[in-house]
Image 1 (cartoon, rainbow, N blue to C red):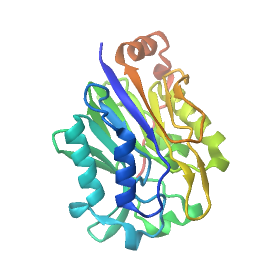
Image 2 (tube, rainbow, N blue to C red):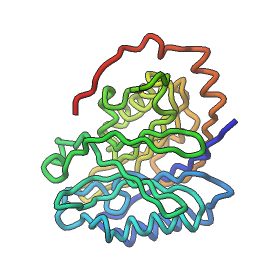
Image 3 (cartoon, rainbow, N blue to C red):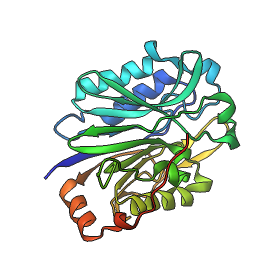
Image 4 (spheres, rainbow, N blue to C red):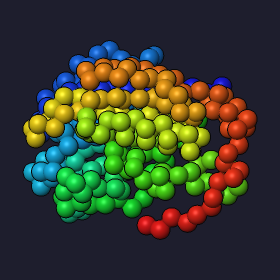
Length: 267
């Protein structure tokens, strides 16, 4: 049996203040380390809040203090740390989800679906690659916030005789309170339709635009049932466990994947 201990970190972020947010998150994480978790999940744009001020707030990928902080936390705590950061790279701006490992390595995913209702599509570049990472024998699909509304982008796309492409879908977000019900429903729907775990991490508090965030960070299993769901709009940190045996047994018992439609995704 393989397990993946996953820590959901739901903070009340400070607006456009990376130093304050990194300090806040470090305090929230406390002495959490390798003995307690394998993976720490932070929200979307954890260093700044959901800013459209990309030209001023985006950090160079090769010299990002926020990314360096993530890498340092991963190495010190002996676990992977992930979350998204406003990044500028090769002259373009991205809402980039960083995957920082304890050995100092980095992987990243650039948000595909940009939230046009906030003008994100005018301030950031669109990603064009799906990214799957591996940890403790689990394959995880990286996604950011608005991506959650687009099931084709997130649908299992197995190749080469494999039945499944990933075992868990990981979504980091700044999802506002007025649409909290959609967030909750979509997390569960993505789990059910993909026969996978879903990890959704959101923030709480209010940003500079007076937009409130209700949290609702969740760990959902492959049947759409909640393993973590505190339903409270306060900061919290909570660790849950993904179980590979339970996942495999359910996939074998309920092989809905055998009747899935085949499709080609156009970028």
